[in-house]
Amino acid sequence: MASLQTSPLLFPSSSSKKIHAAIHVPKLPRFQPNFSVPTIPTRDLVEDMNIRDAFTNTVPIEKSITTRPIDVKSCNSSANVVNSQLYAILEAVSDRVEMHANVGEQRDNWNTLLLNSINMITLTASTLAGVAAIGGAGVPLLALKLSSALLYSAATGMLLIMNKLQPSQLAEEQRNAARLFRQLQGQIQTIIALRTPTQEDVKKVMASVLALDKAYPLPLLGAMLDKFPATFEPAVWWPENQFRETNKSNVGKQHYKKTEKNGWSEELEVEMRDIIQVVKRKDIEDYVRLGNLALKINKTLAISGPLLTGIAAIGSAFVGNGSWAAVVAVTAGALASTVTSFEHGGQVGMVFEMYRNCAGFFRRLEESIEGTLEEKDLQKRENGKLFEMKVALQLGRSLSQLRELARKSASSHTDGIEVDEFASKLF
Picture 1 (tube, helix red, strand yellow):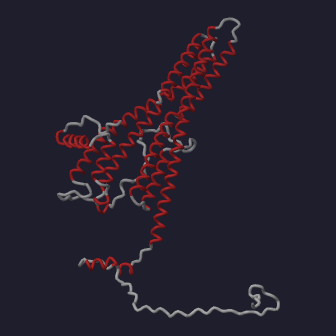
Picture 2 (cartoon, rainbow, N blue to C red):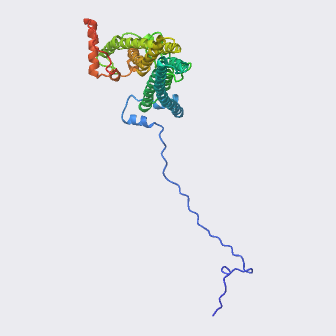
Picture 3 (cartoon, one colour):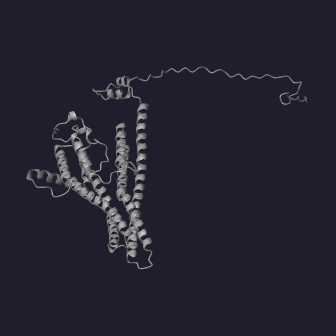
């Protein structure tokens, strides 16, 4: 048998020779396709569809694109900026709603606490004056007289401050401000939800916020509204000329065709003008009359309260020197407590502010209707049917009731019969 030799590949050794191996792969032939890739037509897809559908009046899309390029990035950027601005204003409005609500609750607490404190002080001083008047020997007359006079003086000072501030009226102002800011908050949300906001929307909303801040200020010192004006004036919480931004050169009589345009017709315009006449003659005049009456009553009560407590303080200082001094001190104190309870317990200042706000509501409705009718471009107006529905809702009426009221107003011009009802059924 032949002897087996050990392979050097399996058992390498230092004496074995190096083996060089190489693998040769055959080269593949190049693949050359025998077809050509079709070129993409330069014609636009829309134009190609127009040609296929045999449209004769087509828009030269390629020319419009080349002559007026649209910068999509800048359009998106400007839209995002407008949205961001509106959301920033929305956050500020939400914060103002919370602030006015909290401040209104605080000032309502002021009214309750100050009223209770002043009445307790006044009745205590009156009791001390009566005890000093009927006290016999051994009664500390000087101490009772001095205590009564000091308590009456303190009540006089507190009443002067309270009547100047009118906490019930301050609370009503803040309640109205919170309600109006909530209304503005809803308007902003509606704009964002229904359409793409514009820079003009941002300007209008910003002007409305500043007008509300001016109409219902939060601070007391330096910015507080005059609680006793010379004459009654309706509240104004909307920007000046908000509803009168019309082109004066376009003012004239509007000629309507048989068909409506943007929901407006000649009959609807006449109806709106008749509604304005009822609002002016009935609602606004009535609230101005009631506001002036409330203002006079509030002024009289604001003067009478501190005057009575001052007289009682002087009378209590002379208790013991005659029976009339005690009568004056006790009687004036009781009357002062009654007047204060009627003024601040009855919240006469709040009633005055309520009349002022109601008159402002009708004044705003009047300006809204007149400003809309002054705009002669019907496409720029709010839709007529929608505008009529809003007016009906603001007056608490249905559309049929609103048209019936307009008919009565129109007949009053010809027959001379006064309309026997107010325009609003809400208040």
